[in-house]
Length: 407
Image 1 (tube, helix red, strand yellow):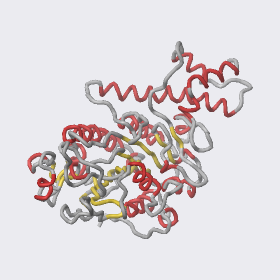
Image 2 (cartoon, helix red, strand yellow):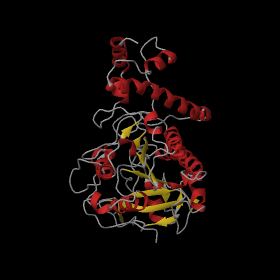
Image 3 (cartoon, one colour):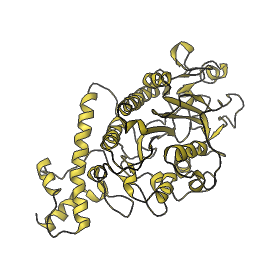
Image 4 (tube, helix red, strand yellow):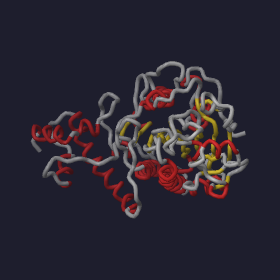
C-alpha cells in the first residue's frame, strides 16, 4: 500500500490519538499484550477498579443498625429488611447480590473507613491523591508507575483498558500501556476489510509507522471481543457514565474486564490491569440511580471473579475497588449527597480472606459534617504492593510503614 496514502489515512482516522500512549508516544495494542503469553513471572496479578465521581460509601456498605444513618438520610436510607446483611449491623446495597454471595464464600473483603489526612473534596485533587499516593503534596508519578519503574519498565507489565493512560500508571522513567477499548471512529467510506488492510505491514515504512498502523487491527480485535460481551447485554437498560468527573468515555466495565480475563487466561506477562467505571457523582435523586449503578458494577465484578476462579492463572488475580471519596453523611435538599471523605474499599479474589475489616467511622463524631477516616489508603496500597506484587512498599510509598492485614 502506498506510504503517503497510508499516512494520510492514519491521520484522518485519528490513530495517533486513539492508539498512542503517554509512554514515549509508543503505541501498544492487544496483540502486543498477548504476545507476552507465557512470559509472566511467578506472582499474583492486581486488577484495580476505579469508580469515578465519588461513590456513596454509606449507601454501598450500609450501617442500617445505626439510628444516626436513617436520621441523616430520611429519603435515602435503606431499612434493615432491604439490605443484604453482612454482620455487626452492616449490609450491602440490594444491588450487590453477586458481591454478597462472594462475601458469603469468604472471597470478598470490605475495608471500611478508608481515606487520607486533610481530605480534599475536589474530584481532581482527590483522585490525584489516590492515584499518586501523595496526600501531603502534589505528586508527579503514580504509585503503580513507581512500581513499574522498579519492575523492569516494560509498559506491558501495567495495562489500562481505559481511553487514556491514568496517572497511576505513569512512573518517573516508565509508563504503562493503554489499549483503548471504546468505539473506533472510521473515515467515511472505510470498511472493516479496508481497515484490516491498513493494519497490515508494508515494505519500506518506518517501525513507528508500522506500529501505529497495527493499532487499527488491534482496535478492531478489541471491538470484536467487546461485541461478544455486548450481545449478552442487549436487554439491559442504561448506558455507562463518564469515565471521569470531567469527561472521557470508557467502555462498559464488563467489557473492560472481559479483555483483562482474555489476557490473564492467555498467560500474558502483565501484572497490573487498570479499568474504570464512571457516573457516581449523584447530587440529586440518588437512591434509584445509585442502586442501578451498583447493580451493573456487581454483575461485572461478580462475573469476573467467578471466571477467574475457574483457572489456575485466574486464581492469582486480586481485584481492588475504590473511589476518590465517599459522600457527606447528611443528604442534601435534592435527595442526593455531596462530596464527602472516607469510604469503603472492596478486595476480592480467590486469594483474599473475606470479611468485614477496619473500624467503621462514627456517624456522629464528624469532621465538618464528614466521616473521619480510620484506615489510611496507603495501608491498603502497601498490602497490595507487598502481598500481590511482591514489592517493597516503603520504597514506592515514600517510606510509608503502615500496612493493612486480614487479622
